[in-house]
Structures are given as C-alpha cells and as structure tokens.
Amino acid sequence: MNDEASPVKGLLISPIRSGTVIDHITAGEALNVLKILGITGSTTESLSVATNVASHRMEKKDIVKIENRELRKEEVDRIALIAPQAKINIIREYLVVEKKGVEIPKILRGVVRCPNPGCITNTNEPVESTFEVLEKGLHCLYCDWWIKTDIAGHII
Image (cartoon, rainbow, N blue to C red):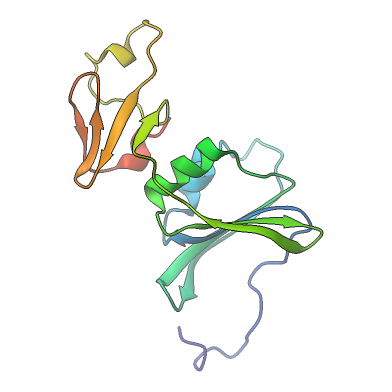
C-alpha cells in the first residue's frame, strides 16, 4: 500500500530505548532472523517484529527490534546470508549511535551445517564447518558439497 492510500501515517512499532533494530530484512525472513539469533518463544528478549512493511527501496521488508541486545559480528554474518540488504542500527537512549550494513563474508566458519551426512564436519571429529561463499551458492571446503537453495534451513 502506498502512502497516499494509507489512511493513517505513523510508526508501526514503538521506538526502543537501547538495543538493536534490524531494518530492510528481506520480506518474509524476519522469523528466520529470530531463529538465527536464537530467539524463541521461551527466551526473555523484549522484541518487536513487523513483516511485509511497505518500503520505498524494497517494495516490502521486515523489521526486527530487540531491546537490550547488541548483535555480535557472527550473528550479523548469519543475517547477511538471508537478508543481504539488512541494516543494523544500534540504539542507546533512543538515539541511533551506529548504523551499518551487513556484509556476507567470503568464508563462513561454523555458521552453516553441511547437508552431506558423510562430510567430516558431521562426524564426531572436532572440525568446524567451513564454506566458501560464491555467486552460485555455498561451497563446503571439506567435501565439495554445494548449498544453492534454502540457506536459512542450513544455518546452525
């Protein structure tokens, strides 16, 4: 819906005092972002989620606001896999103190589980999964397996 057709303008969700706002998440991926962050119905985080919000840049987007939590780099790397246009805003005392985009790293260690049951990373060996990020998908550096679809489903 565009702004002219909307009878009410305003914020869909309230501002947060401190924490992280993840904006410009690919529409429909907000729940996967929560999964990546380990946020479930039984965790204690105070959060707001908006899905399929109108966006000038993306047409539709999702937004996640998490109170009292700033994301670690590895969490941001995981989010980049499913929401490469996401923006991370760090909020303190209702002000944005840091705003950054996400960047997909060239190598992912311990972020994605290899779907090959014979891969050494799926045995009892102390080997962390390692994938090379290429245009056509994720390439396991141990067994040459490719992940080309449902990347979110393979995130550890």
